[in-house]
Length: 343
Image (cartoon, rainbow, N blue to C red; front, top):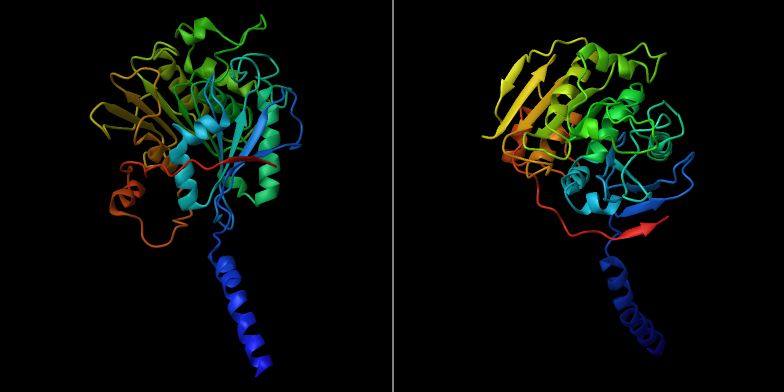
C-alpha cells in the first residue's frame, strides 16, 4: 500500500513538469549575427534569417539596406515582407550591414567595382559562400535585392558576379558603375543627379569590364523607380534599363507594357512572364520612398523565391494565388518583430 501511494504521489509531482516541457514552444526563428564568415576587407557585419521550416534546397536572398540603415532596420521595416515570404516559402536571407560613417555601401571605388577586388562586394560574397555551405542553398536560386544604396549594390553584385546570382530586384538605384569616383568619395553627384548618360552599349561594356573572362549570361533584373525621385534622379531608371537590356542582347523597346496599379507603368523586355528577362516599374507621383505597400510581393515572384511552393501548408489564399499568373495582391501583414542575437 505504501509503495502504491509513493508511486501515485511521484506521478502527481511529476505531472506539472511533463506539462511544462510539452507546453514549451520551440525556439522561433530570429535575425542572427554571424562572425568569422570569411574575407571581409571593409568590416561589414553579417546577419542571417533562417525560417523555422527551411526548404530542402532553399533559395538564398541577399537583402541590402539603404544609406543610414541597418540589417535590423530593413528586416523589421520596409523589407519585412521579404521575411514573411521566407516563412512561407522556406528560403534563407543574408543581410549585409555597412559599418562606416553614414552606413552606405561602397559602389564607387575601384576595389568595389572589381570582382573580388577587396571592397564591400568582396565581403558580401563571403557571406554568400558561408550561407551556401551552411544551408545547402540551391546554387541556381541565389538572388539579390536592395533599396537605394542597397539597390546600387544589387546592380553591382549582379554585374560582377553573374555566375552566382540568377536575378536581382533594385528599388531606386542607378546603373552598375555609374557611381564610380576617383577622389576617394563614395558619393557621385553627377550620377545621383541623373547626369551620367551613356549608350546602352557603353553601359553594357562597363559591366563586361568588371568580369572580363565571363562568357555566360547575366541575371534577370527588375528595376523600380519613382518619377519624382530627387535623391537618385529618375533619369537613372532609363539608364539602368539600357544597361540590363544590352547585357541580355535586347532592344529598349518593351515587348510588354501594363499598369498593375493606377500609378504604375510596368515594361518587360525579352521574356514577358512574371519572371521576365528585364522588368521596369515606374511609379508616378512618387519620390525616393520605395518600396511601398504591395511592391515586395511582386519582387518575390520575379526573383522566383516562391518557386518552391508554400512551406506553411495548405493552399495559398486567393489574393496571393493570382501572383503566380502575373502579379500578387497586397503583402501579408508583418508579424511581431523578432529579437536579434549574436552567434
